[in-house]
Image 1 (spheres, helix red, strand yellow):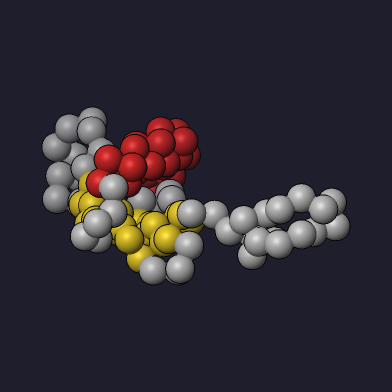
Image 2 (cartoon, helix red, strand yellow):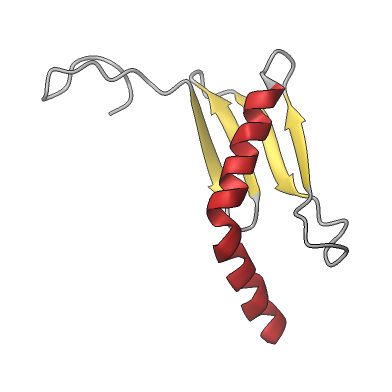
Amino acid sequence: EGEGGFGVTGLFKPKPAYQISGDFLERNFVMKNANDEVVAKMSDDGWFPDFDAMDHYQVQVAPGMDALLVLACTCAIDEEYDEEHKEKNEKKNQQ
């Protein structure tokens, strides 16, 4: 699935333009294009662990890649996993 062509249903399933993979709870993931080339890397900055209530990221974007798309995806993933990330940190701090 995802390689394009006709499947059992007869529908065309093109390969996704981008895929994001990695450890979302640890906030360390990469974005790859349809050719499996890394076009962006996102990671937890770690420089300001308890400085404020904001999450800080390092985001590297390949030349020619849409930086705004990368930042929007980073924000969406951050929002999706924010509660789970907070729970994991609380458990880690209690140990």
